[in-house]
Amino acid sequence: MPEREPAPATVALPPGAPTALTPLLTGRRSVKELTGDVLDLEEVAGLLRHAAGVDGAGHPTYASARSAHLVSVTLVAGAVAGLHPGSYQYQASRHLLRTEALGDQRPALAAATVDAHWVSGAPAVLVLTADIRAADARFAELGPGQGDRFAWLEAGLITQNAYLWAAAVGLGVAFIGGLDRAACAREAGSVLPAGHTVLGLLPVGNPAY
Image 1 (cartoon, rainbow, N blue to C red):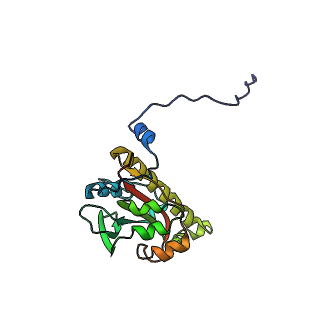
Image 2: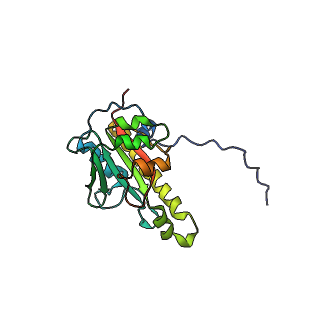
Image 3: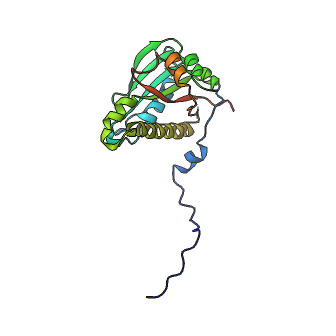
């Protein structure tokens, strides 16, 4: 057999054909300076449907191991037209909000972060949570901690959807993962579904620049 040439240490890749996704990835970034201007309910509905809802054919907009859909999404509204300030559980299959608690919950969320006090001025915040104990039980045969792992993967997929949607419509969003768990339990208890742990916050609004 003829001798093969040794494999090169590096391989230069072609640029890849641009697609409709290309400008969204270019524009996708964390925006932490928001104007606080009121958001339309249509904008919030679009965010929820694209980030963590179902499409026109009834398929979820993000992947989930065994279709478990471990992550719950709570909308904390502060300045959303048509909504009283408060927290609302998003029910993706029916694309509706269930009122959980009235009153401005944003200061409590901001107090539960490590250094993102500006969250209190965001018009709306998506709170991503999961029941980690139930998630681990769902995947118990795979070993300890697998439900936790899958919940974090789901949260990442939802977050990327939110970033791409925001880039498409010109709004700003940022993932806040620096949380004080004790403060979350103490300050944001009325926002969380029972037994849930906060995975991250997604404040959204109009960019201030």
